[in-house]
Structure formats: C-alpha cells, structure tokens
Image (tube, rainbow, N blue to C red; front, top):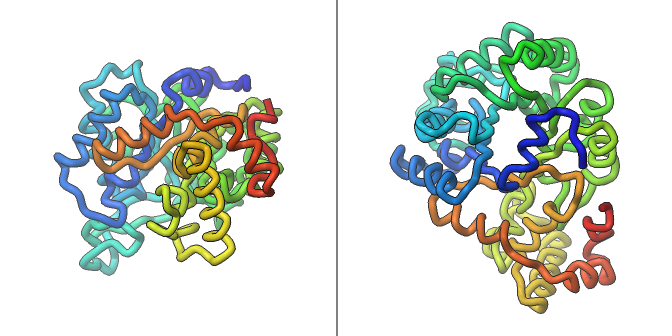
Length: 329
C-alpha cells in the first residue's frame, strides 16, 4: 500500500517488526534498568529499527529506559514514536504503587490533557525523558472519551507541529476501530495504531478501518495481535486472557481449534497470530511488547516464521477465519 507521509513509507520499508515499550515500563512486573537495557539492546542487535513507547507506560519509565539505549544510536537509522494525551504529574493522593497495571511507585499520576498546550507540553516532556533530539511519530493515546477535545485540540496542534518539522508524523492509538476510522476519514492523520481489533480471533478492524486507511494512504501499525495473551502460546490455556480478562468459553474453543490446526500444519498458534497481520497489504507494521532478550529473540523468530498456505485455506474452509488476509492484495 502506498502511504502519503514519507516517514510512514520508511516505517514500512524498515524491518517490519517493531519494539513495544510497555513491558520495560514494568507492565505487570518489575524489572531492573539493566534488564530493560538488555531488551532494547537485543532488539537493536536483531535489526529492529522501530521503537514505540508512551508516558503512560510506567509513568515515564519506559520512555527513560528506551531513550537511554537509543541516545547513542545513529538518529537517522531508527524511527521512534511516543504518545500524547496523558501528562505525568505529582499525585494529589500518592499511593504506594501505581494502580494502572505498572509495577512502579504511585507518587505520580496521569492527567488527561488533549488541549493544544497539553500536547506541546507532552512532546517537550517526552523529549526530555527520552533524551533524544526529536520524536518521529506522536500518537494521540486512548482518546475514547475525549473525541471533541482530541479533534479540536490535539489534531490541529499535531498538524502544526508536523508542518513545522517538530514531529515527522502523527497518529492515534486505540483499542477500538470505530474512532480510528473517524480519525482516518475526518482528519489529516498519517498512521493509526490499532490494538487487538485485527487478529486471528477477531477481524472487526478489517470492516471499515483498514479499507479507509488504504484509500487515504494512512499507515496501520497493528498491535495486540495476541489479544492480550490467549494467542501468545502454543497452548492457549497457558495464558487464557482475552482483552485483559479471562477468556470466555467460545473464545477459548476457537483459539484451541486454531492451535490444533496450526500444529497439524507444522506451525504454532503464536506464529500464525503474527503472520496473520503480515499477510494483509494494509498493515504497515506489527509491533510486539518485549521485556527480555529472550522475548526479543522469540518475537523475531515468530516474525520470520513461515506458516503454510494450507493453514490459511483450511482455517477459512472450517469457518475459523472469514477470509485469508492475503486475499486483499
């Protein structure tokens, strides 16, 4: 697919696998600075050149850890994205630990701000935490309940910052497809980050969002391809989480059927989950969360895996997939 912004075209030309920085922000589990550095360094050594982070991830910790490794890398060799919409401020009522899924102290808090001033402050503060000279892509982060604020505040501000060269591109990152489709249709957005809505288990993001993005030259970074855990292992019962909750019985049954089919064709469920996205021409990049060098190596292996064509054909014939994503080519 041809994209309108050259930076997003470059993203498509890079090693298509991206490094997702939430885990090194202590998502669900505490790790040390050295462990985080090892993960980012392993990704670089593996040829990964797209790194995504956000202030939300560990109350700024992920940005600091990502930037600590990238600061001495050639700046023109990688693409760096972060997000706007959450400012990190001292908590009015400090807690012992953060209560939004990250194993960090709760002395800081996220303040939603999609105003022009808030967007500019967010960019400035992210640059300071990252320790780099520029941010390539700025995503409006989770504006589900803030459509008007994002449309009237964030969008014109990001358009201006892009025009001024402060950022190379802007996008929106969400766990839903409907509002992302509105961004594509109603704004001059460059790229969307779609989380969990276009996977082996559900293809709702293919209905409106991907066709709209393809028609308008907007890039698509597909994340959440494991649906928060159930597709991440050869046996889906190993971590039967779906959309961050216990998976319902029908989802478990479908995942098990896909796992059995993958095994019958000499591959694995997580390999098929990653390759599913890569088969679709509207998908610019697949980004996976990585916490350790071992996870980096595994994700690269999944990215490079070859899933037999017969798997896709049988998945469609058995009703496990509505359509082979390669058919959109």
